[in-house]
Image 1 (cartoon, rainbow, N blue to C red):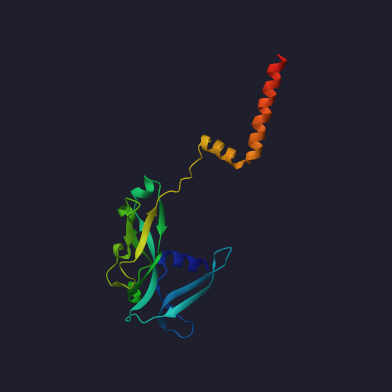
Image 2: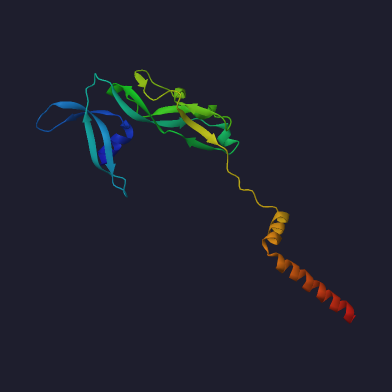
Length: 183
């Protein structure tokens, strides 16, 4: 298992491997299709391999990876939203990228949007996903406004029933009249 983990880290998701079955002696090119991991230890417990023809193109989902820095995020406090985190590409198995990079330095305002057409597509790879599809944008920060003290006091008076407010003021006036008559 340790050797597989090292291989997977260095080769990426769409690596073509020559698989030799003991006893047969022939090797076949295979592609890592799915890897099932243990839910706690995250160690691989099962791997599905797909025998491929190196001369035929195939269509796969490829993850999108961001590079660079955005002024809308760093200086204005925005949050990067991934509208799509994968795109579909078509290529021969040896040309399949493990991921595609997109530079986010173009996201300078909250209105800026990066599309699939902004991806760096290597040679030998054809984009299947619509190039007008939006991929990334920056959401403005959510700022919670603190209520002003005067608004809170007015809200508290309006929340109390009218009879209590009137009763409180007449009781206070009565107490003041008793004090002035005693003096």
